[in-house]
Amino acid sequence: DQTLLAIVQYAIGMSVNEEQHVRIEAARLLLLLSRSKYKEATLLQLSKMMDNEIYQIKVQIINGIDDLNLYNNKISDHIIKKGMADTNYWVSRAASKIKGDIQ
Image 1 (cartoon, rainbow, N blue to C red):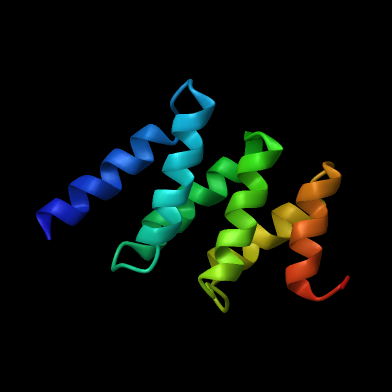
Image 2 (image 1 turned 90 degrees about the vertical axis):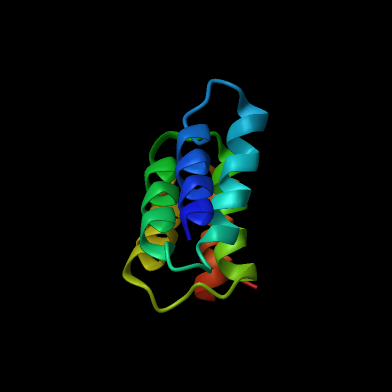
């Protein structure tokens, strides 16, 4: 339990790293950890990342929510809404696809 908590804290810390590739891996790890008992904390960090991350990471987060079936959760729904409102074509397209607005 302490080990899992340490990994969650580490992933959250790495999600604000200066290096893009580190943030990409942190987002991937946070998505996987969202299946643990720390779901809320990891999804909250992913939601924060949706505010000002590069489009590749935002698309990764949105697709991860889809791949891991993280639906019916207020935070994941909010992440999808953020994606739909994003000005980047690829981000809004990925989010709209999940919502079923496009095929």
